[in-house]
Amino acid sequence: MGVLPDAGGRLTESDCQQLDRALQLATQAIGLTEPNPRVGCIIHGPNGQLAGQGHTQQAGGPHAEVMALRDARQQGLALAGGTAWVSLEPCAHQGRTAPCCDALIAAGLKRVVVTLTDPYPLVAGQGVARMRSAGIEVIVAPLDSATARAARALNVGFLSRVCRSMPWVRLKVAASLDGRTALSDGQSQWITGPQARADGHAWRRRAGAILTGIGTVRRDDPRLDVRLVPTAQQPMRVVVDSQLRISTQARVLQPPGRVMVVGAQANAAAVAELRACGAELRMLPASHGRVDLKATLQALAAEGVNELHVEAGATLNGALLEAGLVDELLLYLAPCLIGPGQFIAELAALGQLTEAPRLRIIATRMVGEDLLLRALTTAGGAFLN
Figure: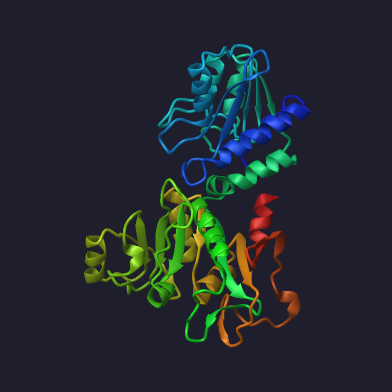
């Protein structure tokens, strides 16, 4: 995941505690900073007391380090000789904001502790190197430390986009205990309870985009926005629609937020109608008569999408899984049995049980009366490890 500088020293117990606090601050940037990473920063003055803290703001706004420095200066506190703990390597390039490593150097800090280096090519160890050249002691947490693993999980989408040119793809499904997502006639509201639905919206909030297929749009007419939890911004909604069959009255096309329709077969009338109602059109090469899903994900990464949240039907779910494009599954299991109905995913028949792809369950918890299983696919597990 990028150039890794020498750790430069050992973390103390206090360092680990402060890095954990910086990570907690970084979680407050969820749903705010896309496409930038979620970062938290804590600064202590030379007396060892808390001087300032902050997290990254919206894209184009101040980064975590600047927010923490502002916090300290507004209180009139001295920083020279102090220590900063940052959950991701301070940036070293001039983008929409000035380099954060330079701001920490100018503040006269004696020591900076970093949870994770930034693989972005214009940073990639250069922030650490520049601070060390200025005489600051810089320590980087070991990659196998609990703190570094938590930092990777928090920014897994950013890391995926930078390192793989693909978003982190999280497939969400709500199903009965016998694996049905709806009755045979398509009725699915509601298999899971209100707490699970709100939890699903919290996962939507994490994403830069929410992906679905034209089948789900035509059958369920979903909005696919974030409503059940507070959010600073709405994720982009993306509809895979090879033949541009979507109705301009579909609720997914309604504001607020960006909407993109991805097609493979141009239809001048449909293109004009969709653009007239504010939708963005992206025409991509077809694969077996359908939108090329890998090309779709690459295009979304190029748009700055870090985490892609998928809520679709069995056809698109199966296509993504069989193409190896899913990294993580969110499976909400309701304590009910449906019998004949729609499956989680349409998958090709296996010749042997040994051919079945194995998932790695990484977390389970009750959400109201429903059980949430989080599992990594082979692709997702390989990337995080």
